Image 1: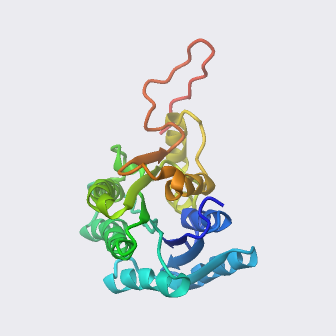
Image 2: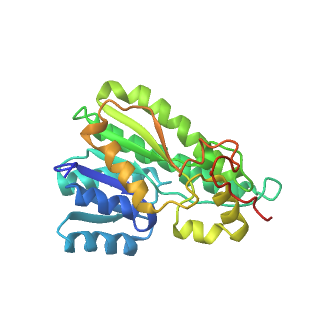
Image 3: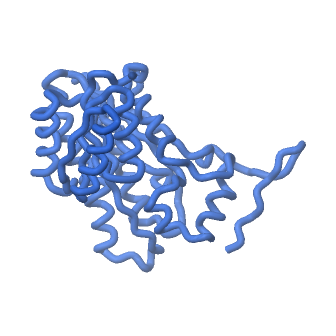
Length: 265
């Protein structure tokens, strides 16, 4: 019960990593507002949490709407009395090479992944400032830290969010608000199922020391920690949950260490 008595909002929590975070927050005692552009999906997750004995409610939120962003924070306060934790999780991905990207592709990724996080984070921070206490967690990406094939739009938006996290952490700390980020690597989600073809998966597994994709629960575990009092002196950090991908350099067989096979592209 590391989050007992806390109130959390999580964008894009009708499925995937957002849903996993919502369920973990609820298991740890938080009241959770499930928000998603798909209201029926959000309602289903909230109902399931309530059936399991947790506290949750749902609201439809388009993160690119300033009105919806404020409505999310207001809903949390109206329904549960306050707002302690906000997670910017909603995101989209367009996987096209640089020369194939369109302006629309770039704008969709920037609007949802970066501008949406800005709007919802700002609305949450303004509410948290009233009590001079809060936690904001931005879900960035390994793709925002490394150059990768077909990650021009998605990676750029997540790189921007990583920098925004640092600015938020500096400016909001004086109000008792800690802002941090989680950068997932390759995670088994509906998005990865859609965008990771066999060649992409093989390339990832070659570069990940743990030789596997992560699962949404592992992102949720990191989020619970950053939202908890145990992380009260952690501010402005990016926690990679990537199986060692970012850290890895040269990998080859030596003294019993089994090296990965080069990807067959």
